[in-house]
Length: 176
Image 1: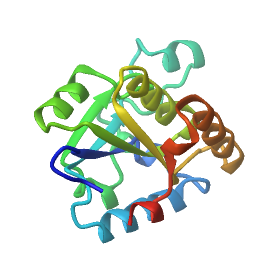
Image 2 (image 1 turned 90 degrees about the vertical axis):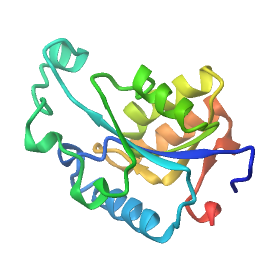
Image 3 (image 1 turned 60 degrees about the vertical axis):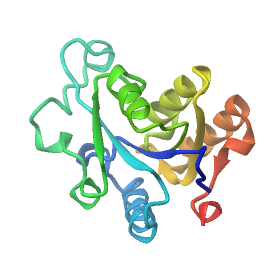
């Protein structure tokens, strides 16, 4: 998959304690298994961490007061943290931040693969921001999920296939 020209990163979106429920536990296990069996398939693994505050849309419009800085539920799942080379903290859906772009630039990354939660929210927004800014991006369908259930995940994958092309929706088995 990777050659001298292509340098790829795996972006593990918001795999935090607060987002693990009956709908997403299987995603956590799949990502862990994938990272365990892959011996440096990617140049680096970048985790993202949503940190809420009083100035976010989630706080102001939804009244969502969870996932605040320093709370245990905000922490990245311990099963995955040791696989991550970088953590990008964010207070919005997208990981497309100055810190994220600096990591890509410093590591000469020109292709990114996304996995994590929530497919229709933070994954979708991050992928679209990369796509629109001409970063070669892919979604690993079976390593994503939604806290609201598989139905919402499936709808989001269909939408992403329409927006970024179906060829950019891949599976972890396709990366072997």
